[in-house]
Length: 144
Image (cartoon, rainbow, N blue to C red; front, side, top):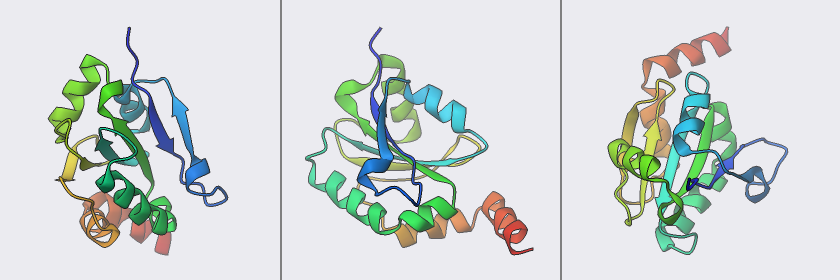
């Protein structure tokens, strides 16, 4: 069975951005299921790490690592040639369109909340997240 390999960005403040990514043999579906209710996911889909939009998105996210961590994000790099058939269907349902570059915000409830065919600016991403009822509850709890 072909497994999907992707990079999980742990986004731990003590780790540099590049070192926070660790390869895993789990399927994308398993990763999303395991983090449901705890993490928001940003799927960054590209044919390779050399794609210009992929590089730009990663640079934008690296500059916002603390804000991503504060919002419970995990960034999953999705390389289309490494997807199992089931994961390929999943990314298409969520809003990625192989082989084109794309990003998809997946909420803590497991639903696709926003997608873009271009790199997503962190302020736009956080603006979307910060309007969500679950995020507003989190902010209220943390301010108490």
